Image (cartoon, rainbow, N blue to C red; front, side, top):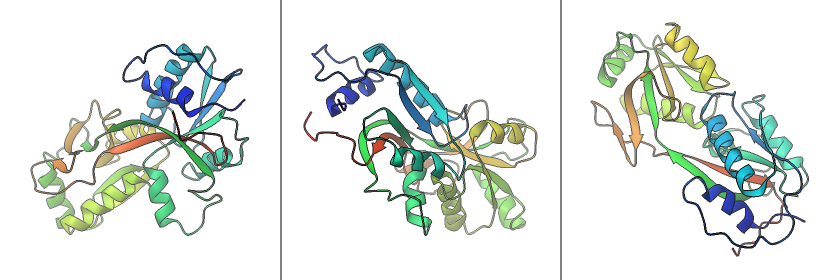
Amino acid sequence: MAPTRRALLYGAAALVVAPPARAQTGNWPVRPLRIIIPTAPGGSPDTVARTLGNKLTERFGQPVIVESITQGVGIVGNQMVSKSAPDGYTLAMLTGGFTTQAAVMKSLPYDPIRDFAFVTSVVAYPMFLLVAPNSPIASFKDLIDRARAAPGKVNYAIIGGGSVYHLLGKWIENRAGVEMTAVPYRGSVPAFTDLMGGRLDAMIDTATSASPSKMLAGTSGNTIVSSGPITALGDLWKALIGAGSVRVPSSM
């Protein structure tokens, strides 16, 4: 039997508050669940998915397998979910990049609306513009000044081309009137390795992965926290999705 929306929401809500015990309808789940993430292990989607998986296991007594599928900037993993059986056993961690891909990419191997069923919001957190602790770049203004003095020479890491990280970086360039070079990575860990090794000037990442870097600016509600007046895009969000015809009743 397919899971009810109530059953899935109980597991997710355990991250925030322990809900009162109630009788579960149906017999889902009777086997392990699978959560696909679109980025490399060690980044924020991986951290969030594993935390959620642990809570779902505590709630339902079934293992939750978190699988990283980064090919095609996560598009391959999303396609696997869209083609999976709509039984609630194969899910995807839907990151902020899902919507930007749908907006900027001319063709996708799935319909981003019809081929998926929204299950629940999981978490929201700010994003940061980071440099290495020993970086000579002292502030956000310093970074922009360097970029203005040498167009295209200052680079920064993003997690996936066409992602929300990419969008935020280009938005900052546009608002500041500078040209920098975005370098796409499949996940936070390899990008941090290059940042700390001095092969990158800066990096855009989420709060869950930001330590131990030096933060120059970050989103917080509608304001970017920095030495310069620049408006933020807002917090990054993550959600769970399943195949488009998975049975997720609207009523809880």
